[in-house]
Image (cartoon, rainbow, N blue to C red; front, side):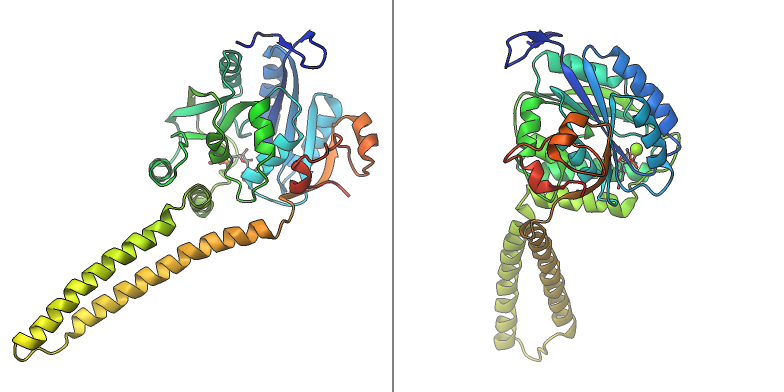
Length: 355
Ligand code: UDP
Ligand code: MG
């Protein structure tokens, strides 16, 4: 059981827990004033020191300018500005790489992940759970299409992957320090954050919440982006699509043998049999289709391997603000401050710090 005070491992002295909020932002200018207000209230209600790390994922609207002002005025706020739009999953990763808290909370910034739910996540963490995810029991204001595709995606993921990725759970979650350090030692490029946390084990639990509709701004996850996330989620946690080709190929070969036997039999014993145009076309197109499909599946895996072997940094930071000035002197970087990178910290592999 964690108490509201935790023991510092170095000094043995009881200290308050430290929390980090990781907040990915992509063109959220309209929501920001409300978000800052709700986050500030949340920080007051949390029983420890809290930092809020905003990660600007290459916003094109006025989000960055707004955030710079807010961060300059509030010492508990930090800002990481990525050099371009790297995508939601990478933005979250960048924030978690910088987080210093004993518990790190990741949440969307469009207020669809209500900040108040964080208090419930924290309560579970104090009961001893290392990872506490927020489960959507009701999704308001989303089109039937989004709800059906999301539901199909979670079920497909469950069937396809060997890892138990919880259903109806997005990236709204709290992770403890152990889970965070494990995450930092997973330098993969094909980031599917919720899968990575499901894979690592530890004591995990869910807190139910009702997901409100987005009231301001627009979704940044159009259909094709959702598909991209779904495909990458599956291929980074499952080899089943590859095996599908093996079994599918075997089944079709077996059918081909049966059909071939029949054709030979008919040719020997029945008169006037002409090789059927229809059957030829059906078989050829079926085999071509399956062949192309499987080449595509293999291509996805090869593409994924290609991304990993290039060993490019996962993201590039353009500018930092609000981070510890003393540390900035240690790391000796200009154009922003950053905590001193630890030796061997895989964050060094994943990041290009501001130049
Ligand atoms: N987001 C991001 N980078 C992107 C797309 C989205 O950082 O390329 C952020 C966005 O600002 C929001 C969160 O990710 O805080 C979830 O996005 P959104 O609300 O558009 O997704 P939805 O809830 O519609 O699935
Ligand atoms: Mg949203």
